[in-house]
Structure formats: C-alpha cells, structure tokens
Length: 114
Length: 113
Image 1: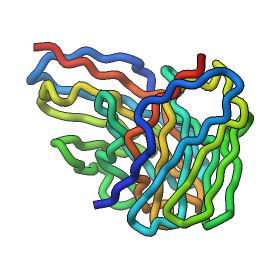
Image 2: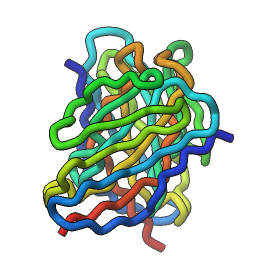
Image 3: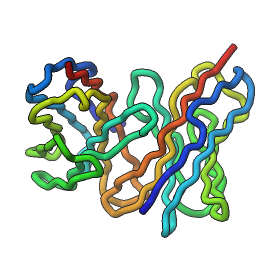
C-alpha cells in the first residue's frame, strides 16, 4: 500500500513566522504535489515536483516555496506566514506523470495562522 | 482551460436511499476523470477513475460513475447509502503529462437515519 505521511495534523503559528510542512511518500513516486483546500474552492495546486530539486508553480504559488532534496520528501515552506494562509494543506504523490496514474494523498495538515 | 463543476454543494440523503452526485467538466481533449472521497479528518481516497472504454465505471465501496461525453458529465451513484458514506466528494479531471488534477469544489454528503 502506498503511504503518504505529513509531519503534522494540526499546526498553529503566528503571523510572520516561517513554517515548514513536510511530506514523505514510501513508494518511490516520481511526482509530488502540494494542494491547499478551502471550503467552496476544492483543492488548488500550489506547487508540484517532477524530480529531485525540480519544481513547477501551480495555480496559487504566491507566498509559498518548496524543496525537494530527496525523492521521497517534499516540503512546503511559508516564508512569512499570514492569516490568509490559514487552511488545510494536502500533499499527494503519483508514480509517474501518466494521466492514467492515481494520485495518493496524505491525511492533511490543518494550519492556523494567528 | 479545463474546469470542473460540482453543482451541489451539500446533499442530505436518508440511509438506505440512493445517491447521485453531479459532475460536469470542460476540457478540449479526451478527459481522464476521477472521483475522490474525503472522510472527516482524512485525506482523499480514490473511489474510481475513467480513461476509456466502458462508460460505466465501478469503484470501491459500492460506487459507480457514468461518463457521458455528449453532456460532459461524470456523475457518481450509489444505490443504497450507508451512514459511513457521509463525507465530502470531489470530482477531478487529469489534463497534462505531469499528472496534475483540476478539482471541483466538492459536494458534502450528510446521511440521516
């Protein structure tokens, strides 16, 4: 079974803090994704990575950066957290980029920025 | 550009009754379509997917979906819902070679006794 884990289920941070969200997958998947989930908006792609050290912006990259130093690990970084970044963050991975592949999701991190 | 519309934000259904969730997509090429479910406090789990072939797709937990190209729809159905089906359901379309998905806004399903 594919397993995607996220470092925290719940996180509370203060405005201006640097925040790291970690995601690890254990199935040697090539591509990894970070989504943000908000009520009424579904999931929106922040960034994705198709290889170690390779990344591409998604639909809403502003205020975020990412790091992928190892194939199994993909980190989302909020350089200076703001209240409008309070949200649920979901990580996903996929074997390759083939459209027939399935994305596997982690349990999510609910981030609150005060 | 691709888009996914789930017209129903919230649906309430009685346990044992049938359920249908609507999904309409806009995409220029052959769509790759997915339904995911998110139970409270959980990540997303794949229910089923459609790429080609038979337009009626069977998934897990007794769900099925029908692809109708003429209506640009991929509606999800279950003949008899269980209390454990209470969750949020997301329709998504895959549209590029990186495996990216475009999601709908989701439909929250509440199951009453």
